[in-house]
Image 1 (tube, rainbow, N blue to C red):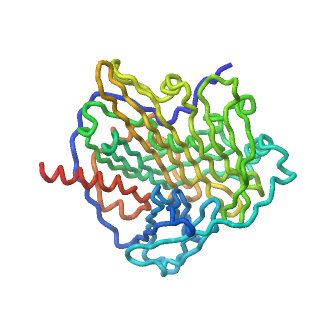
Image 2: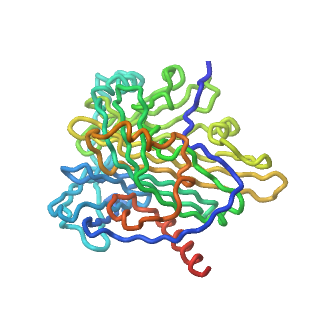
Image 3: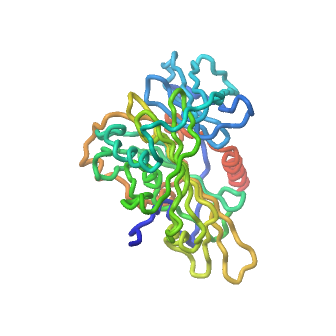
Length: 420
């Protein structure tokens, strides 16, 4: 029996549309201080993307971008804070904010050079370890509702030019991992920048917004990828173990069984050896059958265009605190080629969605009021917000430092608007 629904995050609507332009502006808030740095491999100097960054003793957190850079904003009155940085396969570091300079800060992490122990007796095979991971989710993950603050971003570019940037601070009302209730999301603040002239008349709209990110929480929504027939659909094998800080991490490779025809997923699960908790998952969609894969993403498109997925990348990271693991960050990347009938040239579009939890608290809210303001699971953020409004607000919230190409693209669009 085939699956009723594939993991349909990152749905795309391809439409003909028009857009207006709004100029970007931003300011800092004096009650918060910004700290920036780049995290690199001490041996090679290579930037470490998606390293976890947290403020010790608080719930403030963020993550490095693909250039290894991060920016974190904490209350100015917090003078003795310590920033903790973790990355799988490297020794963790703790740095006092007093050591940070005003300009460039470079943080080097040392890779583990010691030989790692082999798989222990408690993990006789990879499949059993993965099953144990799901069985113990009630022990390892919160069983009480939480109220999260998260920073959300989605970008779209055609070939090398960025055409759209949407950002939002969202309130996430995360349900218990033992509950079948879905998470609830409310937009606190949102802003966007679009220049659809960069994509001619073809516009991508990403449907699902923050829910795309939340559905990557494999422990809360295991059916999105593995379904109830996980063992029938996938092969699980051990890769070489690694570490994060002092914790031993088992690495499990998974891929769809050879007889499965539908496009499924393949990648790695990073599982804590002590308690079988999922630390991270990095995976892709099998694109051998491109037409079948395209049907998983495309909701609507012009009749005279074909959309072919070229690449899909997914990532989710969890944060451990007081022997509990919490959803912390997720990222989705996709490349799609659009072929117009009776046209010589094709276009390639690249889209990225990412969300990072920047603060978390015990649930304390009016459920009736939240339900009135909650967003739909198929929301299109770019349609719900208008421009970079309320610039003073954004200085108060941690953000994922934009990759340099995004910054350059936004500056370029600003210059064009100034000329007009």
